[in-house]
Image (cartoon, rainbow, N blue to C red; front, top):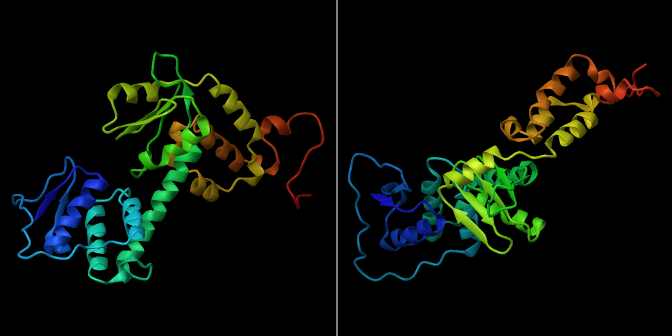
Length: 275
């Protein structure tokens, strides 16, 4: 059975409730979000229940977990959610637990979504714009999961009445100082504005970043874990990182300062334990 919906969690939830009410098992459903193509067979509609069934009550905490996991981008995201929903509705509460195969995957996806939201909060860079846009600041970000609409309020809380816009390859949000506007797909004009904005303070920031970089404390694995390589291209300091890492490997790690600091007159600071 192919079930088409608009790709949102709210629409999926409504259709999932209907399928539960009619007794359609998870293995009978193929979920087709917006723009997705199904198999060779045509769509079919869930059968009407032969007799009225009691309403299905879903624990609120489970819905919160499912909504969070729904932001994880993978081909079977909706199938997993419905399977867990089906099991819990049938009385199997272990479907939500980490010790269960489905529950373990559910919580792994929730964790990945939360981490991606953290990445967005940490690595997104706004640039001022004066090109007649409704937003005073713009930013381009490429998230691995669908976290924009849930992560964006973080910036509204911190930027007060300033207007801003965040564009991604898929969607975008515009904060006008009072109301959050969401667009899916991202309007081409918003995408172009976010990708071409220039930060006048960018060069100053790169100078500061290079000067404070400590080659003696460089740990490549830790750096790439906390600042994944995929984000470097959209950060002002991104092009500097490979150069600074290369210098450190070439011998700069003997100093506790960046090269421009280490060569200045004054007392030399050696690495701990170095003669």
